[in-house]
Amino acid sequence: MRHVPVLLSKVIESLNLAPGKNIIDCTLGDAGHSEEILKHTGPNGKLIGIDADAESLFRAKKYLYDYSTRVVFERNNFEHLQKILSEKKFGPVHGILMDFGWSSPQFEERGRGFSFMKRNESLDMRYDTHLRCAHMTHDPPKDIEGNPLYGSCTAAELVNNLSADDLREIFKKYGEENLSRELGEAIVKKREITIFETVGDLVDLVLAVYRKKLKTDKEIPWIGGLHPATKVFQALRIVVNDELGVIERVLPQAIDILESGGRLAVITFHSLEDRIVKHYFKKNSSNITIITKKPIVCSKEEYDQNPSSRSAKLRVIEKK
Image 1 (spheres, helix red, strand yellow):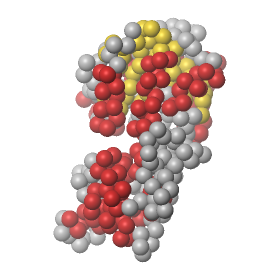
Image 2 (image 1 turned 45 degrees about the vertical axis):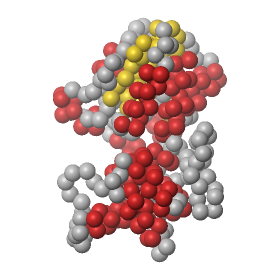
Image 3 (image 1 turned 120 degrees about the vertical axis):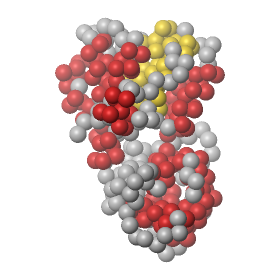
Image 4 (image 1 turned 90 degrees about the horizontal axis):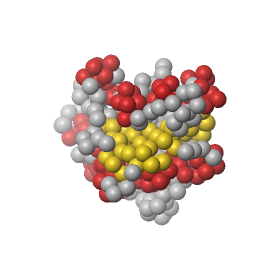
């Protein structure tokens, strides 16, 4: 199953594409955006596609086979954008796309515990399983022995080592979870008996906390509405991959790399990401022109065809 790119027509329009322009896709995924970009920049426009997931690159190479002479593939985290372009001698850069969404194949087919529906998968959540450190600029939380954990471990290691207060902070800050305190305390109590290894281990704990809050002992699957584990899994995934820190570090690089008149298009999927992008653009308005005064969102038609586009927001700037 190939991931359906969100806001595709709006991205193509916003990047102001033309034959011969060179574009960076910082989050290549299944190359849905890149394929359309290459159609609009031929016959000589180049594209560099970056992805930290080796399986994503393998899939993208198949989808972009017809354009292979115009594409440079790079397995890396896009937070190293300037270094990547320097090493690849890629440029000048006329447009950059960043899509912070996670594709369906990544959730469904990677076997790393991204989805709370995959009960038997390991509680991993690392985007790139070969990288142990995200090279963060902020101080990470520490385990009970004082060792740093943020961005350098699996979700299981976080859940099995952090204090109740640290877990509460993660669930509240990155998942906006209302039962963050109760969940943190319940996790610490549960791991005194057994450690968390699989997705199912954590999902069962979350459901138990919610059932206690709702004062019901019914052991039934959660039906209807947002699943209680949604925010917990989002929070852990963000922390494991240092997603917000990566966004903060890459935006200045992107603007610096762009040619005058070049455009940066950023797609976010939740308020924490969008807030970082929005504030950064406003703070640097002297160097850029904000093309989208309000973020572009999906149409009803797109939502009906691709429900995952529901929360997508597209913001676009042009370098002066």
